[in-house]
Length: 62
Image (cartoon, rainbow, N blue to C red):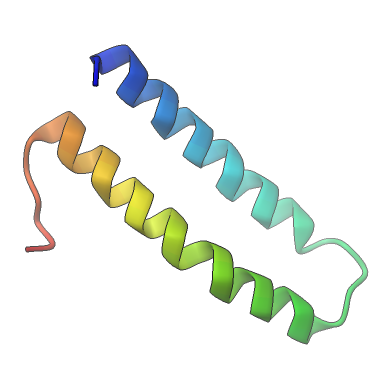
């Protein structure tokens, strides 16, 4: 993956996390917010770690 593609992916992940944060302001029961974050956040963390490793060449999670 080219460097600019890596940064594009990073930007998309940041936007996605920002969307999750804004969704917390929606008038829904707290349990629904917690369930959705429990589904979304682990995948976002995985993707962020992958992009970090691709950009830096280091994996501090191993």
